[in-house]
Length: 440
Image (cartoon, rainbow, N blue to C red):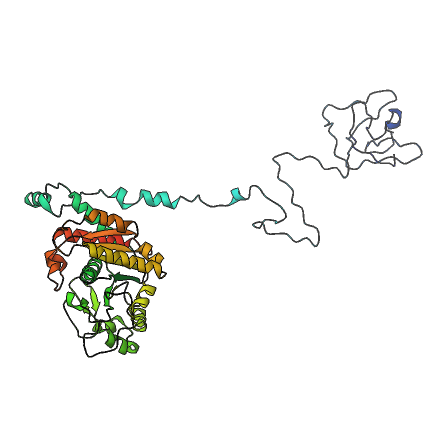
């Protein structure tokens, strides 16, 4: 037995339970003549008395007579102390003892997790408040939900008359035409990044190409907040500068001559004329004594300068496709506007323009182009404009029709306020159609 007990506890019969079966005779307590009356366990045969560590015998505990049962006092707790090396189980709510770490142990901070261990409750221990979805909050606090929407006041027709006569007490609302016009204006004001270059083309003269350039540019300039300029790239004497009030006699030649001294918008403004719609025009050379034509390099240098100060650049090309500046115009253009008249010969010329562009590697520009059927005379005669529109609609991105207008037929300076309502609406539709291709 090596003098050691595994888990000892006094039994009612006075025996000690060990790893081996110990008889009652070997466990008798021996009496001695000590004055403290302390009882000791029996001495094993041939050895010394076994002293149990941590076990205190009660005072006055009598020995066990042979074959008898020890008489235990009723007040003595029979639960023994644990032997040495045995840890007494603690109460589940008792404070846990603090143990000192062994020498050389480096304690980790409590707020840092051991990377070798995975704590499944680590995410729950973060003291963070739940985040509310910002999208739903912004929707709930939007102006459309919190502010009562009022009916828009009418701007024309009998609805406007009733609204004004009633002292703004009766509001019949907008007319369908006013709603359509407001939607077109929203499309015209599509956001635009950088500079968008539009080339106005026509093989045949007299179809209203320069007039369409001026009205389209004026519509953009009057509704948008950015800068719009139209460049007369006609190698011959162009008439674009005659469509707005002339403010300067400077031309594109003077601009190219002084290009090194232009650093601000106010510098370039000295070479352009501006109309009532805020459209600016850069005129072509008007001196018949000048023999040098406007070349491709001249156009590239001009556009390279203008794109730093303007968001929309319209180019009024000549009546041919083989002149010197045409290659530079087509290479730099973002979109094309093919102008045709409502006559048969005008439609054939416009279709021939598309054929030439397809044959010379500008198929992508043709797919993005907008065909404009301009009625330069009152009435269309016997020409079916619907079938003409279907022909161009199969080859271009969109087709727009401009009705005849007496103010445009004058050939003088163009003022948008003097145009007929149908013409203004058609110009709005044309500008909105072109703006659909603006890069966002």
